[in-house]
Length: 341
Image 1 (spheres, rainbow, N blue to C red):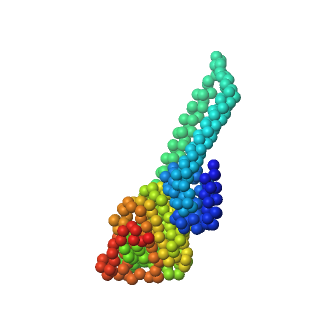
Image 2 (cartoon, rainbow, N blue to C red):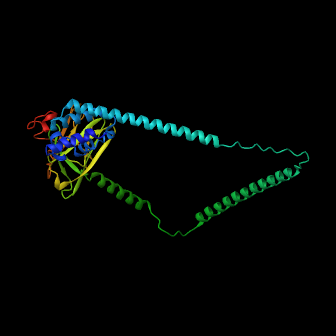
Image 3 (tube, rainbow, N blue to C red):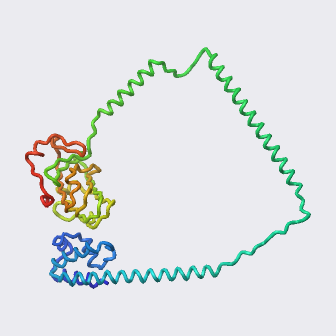
């Protein structure tokens, strides 16, 4: 089953290429290339279209015959399906045999019947009924007594409280309560007026081209997260190189992917997202403020992020409000998807 993978590995070695070299030529992650060379095609069940696309890229990079490689892959997928069907049939047969064996081992439970005695004495049942009735009456009497006693005690306590001349303890006057309420109101107002500082600040250079600055300049790491709303292939590059900690593969609608990056090691990031409308991007859990035009573009999207030390308040943008930008409308030109390559 691994003949195709072995053929690709052999051709790569003949050309003196490493996995990383082939990854740069094909823009495929090293993990995907290793799976293909190891013949692990069963991991990509349901994604045969993408696998054929990968094989075409590899064929072009290694000067292999595209059609022959594709035919070999289709033969492998058919072989995998046949093996799965055979295994399923075998398991079903084994389960059926086990069920029959258990059924044969079951023993019929004997039906024991008790013959009623003609001379059976049922007088003790009457005695039990009388005892139960007496217990119920006694319980009701106890409950009534407890209720009356509790009411009487509560009345005495209230009477004693009203007739007391001296009261000790911490007693708050109306004026004290008003002061306390005013103090709490001022504290609440101060908390509401204190501006919240976002963990990340963004500024926009052009469509799909953003700068970001971390609020904590000394932070050693930050997170990058993507939420997919449609099925799409995705890949992350950091400083122009494929970032292998982010798995380059096909993601399903509703999936999300998060990676943690070292701040000192990142200057730029480029995220390739194949035709995924409505995808959301987050840095340190702060959503990147895409416009509707950017968010719902159905074409191949490449988003570029540049990490900067700080962003001027006049250039900062958020999801809910875009502040006045001197260069956002006059000094920048809206670019298409390919402008960030």
